[in-house]
Image (cartoon, rainbow, N blue to C red):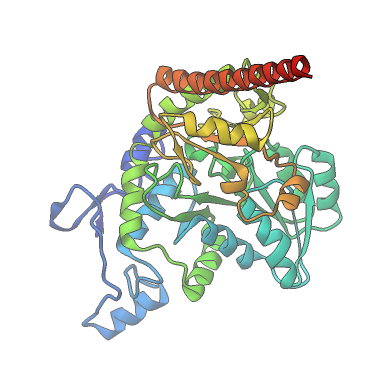
Length: 422
């Protein structure tokens, strides 16, 4: 594909325009208007010297699709435009991206600082896999910024942030923690999956490397797996080398689906955030809800920070139910416009408790230690009409309450009958 306009030249355009055109202002074969799916494993050359120059990176081109692929390259260029990054590297899954970047920049004897209640799979890397490599891991209370700064000051090679967190929606002060990391020369990595590039750009806040699970909001349709890492070319060349050798490359068909999904990201997120705010506000009034987590609520502990570093509050809401898992199992089956599944970021609304979604890899004891309640439910708000999602949630709660009242009344009648009989 011959460039007509080089990547990053559309960055002066709005984000709604860049999700459509970013990385795709090129001349496709046969004058196709859409990025083609190039499924070739290898790419041949008549000129051996040209082949050698491409292999060494002296000339543009492709050698082998584990290393680079034309379709995947378009996706990487699109993410560069959205995150204002020099370079990007696509992976086969979000977890491949997270583990790949951590293994790229951490080695024996080094130290990583992060928070306790990050995504369950990420937490497993910190608790189980990195210690096997001889990497020291310090996990802090997510909301105790001073404690995080203290651990950074003790020595830190990598600071890993996730904000907002999955599934508790806690918000970290990126600028403050980046400043602490830079004082000791640490590399800062941030998972931007929940916020998306439309709501938050960590690189602009001083972060060195941004990670996305492209499976989620970027693709937006729940039909593909992928991950993307963004940053400077100097850092991404190291990540790319790790991916090439370890093999977790993204396949071109998945890249095509993610590219197609990103084009509607601005439209999807606009509707999803309206509904997320409405659901969060309603949940605050529901007697069966113990607490609600959403950065868009003024009473949310991270609301002020979120307003300072985000353009929107996202499409994820979580809440804790009175009665714990017993209430969860009663409520979720009553919902009509919802999948009960372990994914997020899709056009359909998705509900699920932490024990079968974000922290399915963790035991009950581990979840309790991380502060993840058994009654916590995560909602990935879809693009359905807000009124329908609200009505659906309200009717489900009303049914749960009516059944509880009926059970209480029946128990009371039985007790009175027993007393009379006695």
